[in-house]
Image (cartoon, rainbow, N blue to C red; front, side, top):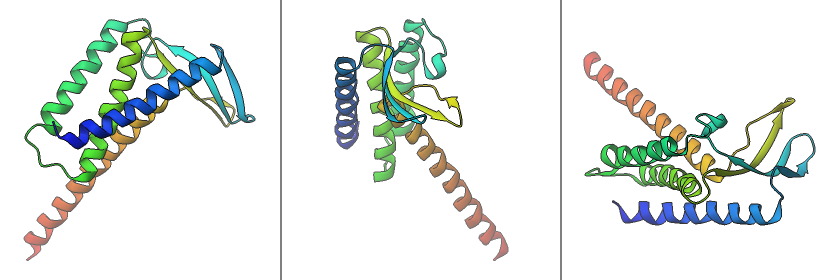
Length: 162
């Protein structure tokens, strides 16, 4: 694996784990601190599932899914590939996020979530730094993939018109 991916992923994992330790030590379980009233709170909740508590209570399945995802990402996106800086950052974020939550599931049996938002009177599901890394990286990878397809299509069309 590329050394830069390991380094960036490790830094992101450390940030994630440090934040979770601080939250767990400062905020009682299932409570929150108001940062911006009726909008943003720092909470301490335990999520035994994935996003939106999907597969709640299925720790082994979630660990297996994480492990398989890490393997697939390595096999198809990293191994024997020439990666750009952008690719390395996106993959590092994805790895860091997956491993950050994987560590929680191994150690605690749940993921520590703490970012709570209320948007237009809707209590958005509480999430964490690792989740942000995963979502941002997936969006970044999808955008790059679409962009590359558009560029290839445009080049192909120009060749046909010439």
